[in-house]
Length: 431
Image (cartoon, rainbow, N blue to C red; front, side):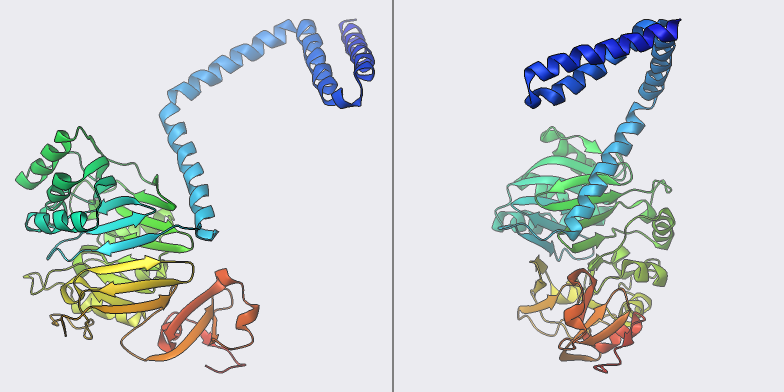
């Protein structure tokens, strides 16, 4: 009997709203459909109050569970959204009037990189305390009065010291570090200057997403290590189809942890971990990044023997173009849709030799295709184009190149670059 009444109520509601809909005209049919649905729900609710009460109870229970895991859910949702944005940015063309550049500062035996995108700035490490004046002057000369993000990969002196210089010149909106406290004079000085700007130091969760102009920033913090070099924050910046990886002092243990997590480590340019120490930059990790350009931030004639022959050989054998702050000075990379323009303070020709000296004080410039290689060995004026899907490489004027999708193209002026990457030569153009 109850079922009959329910069916009758639903039919009656449909007939009633159908008449109203025909009087109102075809233009209101969508509204009529909504009203029918509402009437049906009301009839169902009236005929089944016990079920409604049961549903409400279940909803309350679900809500309680949601509240319990609110922070975790919000983090997951934020990460998912940002990951989608990053993917879109990676495949999308660069917006009109947009600009992106990375400055690797020569701060001696330490790390310091400055990312500027569409007028917004992010600084990653500041070198040792002795570099404070250099960092201050560099920001001043580039008219960077506001730093949107300040990130210290880990609290050791050769990474945090020079950030005090940045804090003395520019205002900072947000600051990050792998640790919130560290019992050294240098780190306490850093905290003092942050406090002077009323900025709290944040320890980011793994896969924290940030936006810097048109660029997307991802911070990796595996949190598997409590302290030391392997506790370094790792930063991946993407701009259009370009990606830059900053490894801090991460060693092979953290590299392996990141690979096991399956995070995106692909990059066109990689800032090598721990100044080229043999404890970093494993062969497998370097292969996973698929980078074509490497930068080592290191001090000239340092007492640690950085960069080591071991790491230099790995980089060379992988076919990467290498820049070093001890030999090249400040290194500036600017991106557009097709190229990375690279300017260095000094020209260096012996970058794959440990303990080498800069060959001149003359500024050097280079223009390279995205993901290209300008390796010292086997470099010519010939441009080769690789197909990421088929793993074959061609001369640039090969008929097969015109049939490739741009996203599958990989450029290099070194034949050995593709051979080392496992590509095979095209049988048509025989490069």
